[in-house]
Amino acid sequence: MHPTERSSMDDVIVIGAGPIGAAAAHHASRRGMQVRIIGPNEAPRATHQVWSSHYDQGRLAHRSARNVELARWAWESMERYRDIEQRSGIDFFHPCGTLSLSATLEHFSYTRIRPDLEAALGFRYTDYAIGSMTTQFPMLAADLPYAGVYDGPPSGIINPRRMVAAHLVLAVQHGTQLERDIVTTVVPTATEVTVRTAAGQTYRAHRAIIAAGAYSGLSGLLPSPIAHTIKSETVTLAEVSAAQAQALRDMPSMMIDCQSDIISDAYLTPPVKYPDGKWYLKLGSNSVYDAFFETPVALRQWVSTGDASATHAAQIGLIQSLFRGIDWLSFQSVPCVITRTPSGVPQITKVHAQVATMVGCNGSLAKSSDAIGRVLVETLLA
Image (cartoon, rainbow, N blue to C red):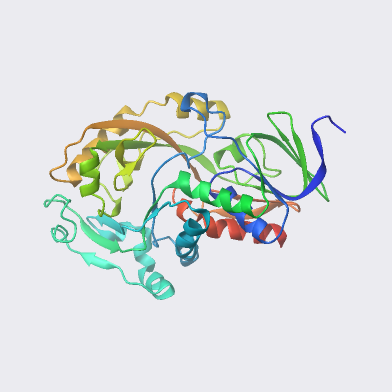
């Protein structure tokens, strides 16, 4: 036996300790399985060997989706947030509602199936004509050229870092072993899976789940390929004072069909306190300057030093146009990464008899990670 190889056999090894992996480990351990989850601690941006998009403080959580199944996953997860918070002792959810803004609301894919979503999930959107939103949302500029569709609480925002921590706490409470390491090799056979790590450790299990986001495909962890692309996304953090953050506490999260030649399909969170102790609104969007990555080196270079000045300037302009009476303290640009599938929906599948994976959050599934973790475990055992 190799000196670092473990003699014990786990039931399941989960590769990736982000939103999907942490939720999958939680669900598998609740079934009484012997689970080991492997993923690195968060590292300084300049030294990232892998990139995890949950290293962030704010993501949208809402019921709008391109099909009813995705909406059900979001709703199932959102209904469990409070229970997960209470059992873990870690809060991560702020139900402030979500407001979609567009000159023509048909722009949003969910509006085409809006009656189906309302019927399936038992709620109703609220419509706002152009110029009619400031009574409900007084922080918004009165001259916005947008109509609105409001998905009220429990839609809102989640803190991905804290949500992952909550799932890991509960998984460990159910017996999961957490290893802070980077998986480099996954070798499945007809009866087991062998996993090797950057620290020289070797682990064995009857089955494995690969939920390592962009790292899954670029680093060759998948036993068979799944069609997907990995693209850059630029995020702008707009700093406000603590007093201003408190005043904006009840603003909704937003999805914005922005009228720009540079950026599109933007989203915005209310102010969230970041690890540096400052309060930021976070805006992300697609951009004509987005790049696509095919190697780990290119991805790490973007994450560490990516230049998105033109996109950043357009995002600042959009943020400033949305509000009135805000004293912005600073703006900073942060690189992010989105994994997309051709269909625009996640691919949850077996890539080997003993290995299941999820590829393609498509920039919108952190909110649904609890349900996706459950589905991943069920797929693995099927």
